[in-house]
Image (cartoon, rainbow, N blue to C red):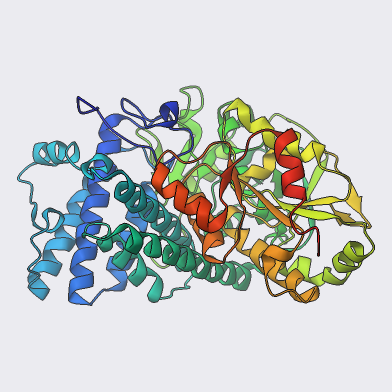
Length: 546
């Protein structure tokens, strides 16, 4: 580029022109916020250089780095004041590390010090993606950074439930530090795959945290209608927030509904005891403007997936955790106890009940324990020729019209194909009437995007059942939709496990350079999807000899 853009961000699938957002994020993120996020990441990398050189970290630093990365994920936080505060905190942490350990690094991320907020704003416009001139090195550095962002999000969820693994934040900080050092393309490719391996470990930790706290998800038919009470709508991913809210709304005559990626909460045994847990309202994150409007009551955003709210309902939106938006009330973090959601509950009691969007129900709750429990039936159906193939259609949804590809693909699948899904991508087909095969649903929904781990466990169990050494020998195809950085972590996790021939869409990441794409194609057979008619025979041919 001949002139420096106001901002540059290409971390999500919807980035402008498939190249990069340069004036304002397609997500609604202003250029100033995008630049401040770049600076926060830059200083977090400086902190990581210090902890790596000192070979010493603390749990407080680990939590700060993870939460800071999480706050920069697409559609998480749009609040400039939040990032200014976090940058100041990050500089204090970095400087304390430098003094305590006599860090001698001369890297600018370690040495730069502002004298004012104007200095911070100026610096925020100088750092970022485009400072790396080599296209392939830039691509790999960003691929690693985005994978680490996804790991940070999942680790944050596990840690609030009391589950920690010191090796995970240690790896995150070593990986961040490595993106500031001179590394060859081969070294960065190796680090990219190790990032995927750590993503697997992190998702396994979160899986254990969720199931230990709330039980293993059970096959559950979730109500889609509404009740006569006022309600609170909960969106995002944080199950601890859901627990706190359900507990505090007991006896208040306020019902609680899930939205978007919170849908899987309905399958956890611990939440089923709450009679006022009413079911799911609405669809995927990108429809929230119309659905939040018709809900009538307050909405709690627990993690990313916030769309800038309309004025007509903005006063009913509340954020918590790493989520933020200017002018929207924020519920403070917990200090060892539960969060106080009383202001939301009181708000709900003043509101009319939600308008009904639909009725009926959808079946969810097929995490690995539930699927393993019916493994004999699945294997028998495969051996009898009743199940011919499995297609993993996990990942993210998005607002672009070309994502109807996934609906059309699901509709076009032969009657003997079973979809394995996790994440909000399922909203493209989870309400289709696809039926079942001998009582086995043709859409097996493992849960949230992090529950892609369950799909890996299921695939391994099936490989064992058929006496196969390689999951790639199974009749399982991967047609993955992506949108943001947690999906990047999931993709890297699959690659680290040796999964080949993944089809990715609706378009390849803008941050993957042609050179890096060549490596992914050569080593893993990664490819973009095209049309349903072209992709279907190719995907269904995988594992034909099983």
